[in-house]
Length: 239
Ligand code: MHO
Image (cartoon, rainbow, N blue to C red; front, side, top):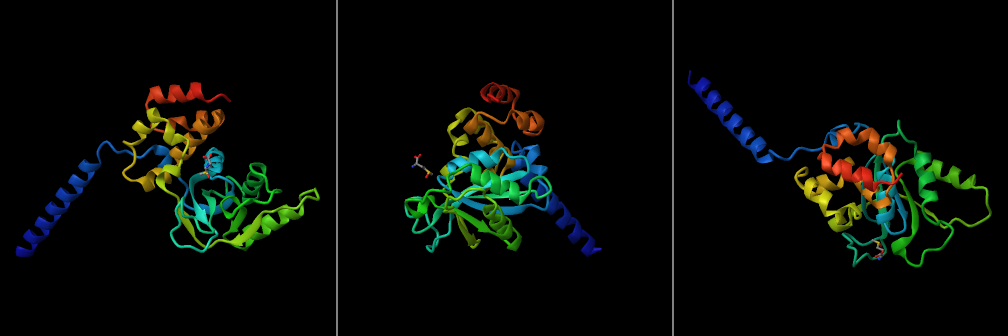
């Protein structure tokens, strides 16, 4: 008999705790698109100049679900923007290989920076960090088949460690749009969630490039944004 009461008390206690948990979270509803992220994502890591640009570009690629910027390739632990050591500005992506291939990502990588120029310093080097043998071979094949004689300065390195850049560098272009940011603040409970959100990756692409209308039209119902914001974006995106 006694044990039944004890169990009952625990059940009630659990219900109370879980309820306050939900209540505390009320008003914070992650956008639907962030719940649609496929399970089996793969990671790609590239350095291609200032990381703000590639964050905008890859954020608008269908099949790329997450982007984040940071530092990689150097020796120092916990680098920061103003104390980089030998690290390089780097973008890291999570993509669905059934929607986009690594070869296609490599194409985007080459099309969006100049791999034929030697970088002035380690901060802006061109690097492909491969996560496995297949990625390495795809990169090597791609370079071997470039039909020109110019020297490619892109380095090929085995992926080792990626340090997140400071929050203000993440989805950098998006962060300057206060109208959208104030709405987003109600959707995420941490910086980490904001950084790794598909919605923020997409929005950063739209405001940073004024393009991506097709993807916008396709996905906008899953963004969970106010109608006013959707209309504002529709006008803002040019193509
Ligand atoms: N200092 C350059 C590049 C910034 S990027 C994070 C600029 O202000 O545009 O290296």
